[in-house]
Length: 116
Image (cartoon, rainbow, N blue to C red; front, side):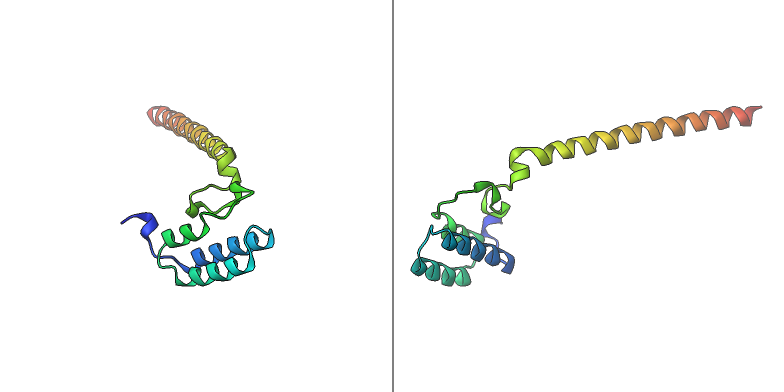
């Protein structure tokens, strides 16, 4: 099953209504178009339906859209989140290497004590 063909949840509809409301407040769509699109959001069956409702709205800040609508939020888009994941991964690697070295050293010491 295609991810876009998934049934639109209430959260998806809420996000679409929020984007429509912000576009209305910023003057990118008029009142009549806003009311029509809100009704269509209520009737939307899939995520593709919601995407088509929001596709032609001009967007001043594309980094703040929701990830399910095909764009990434700011931190992922700028690469900061990926850098954080890389640093955390390196810290886990270093910690596991230190723990492994400690267990090996402790095993050797206990083995030497047992032999004496």
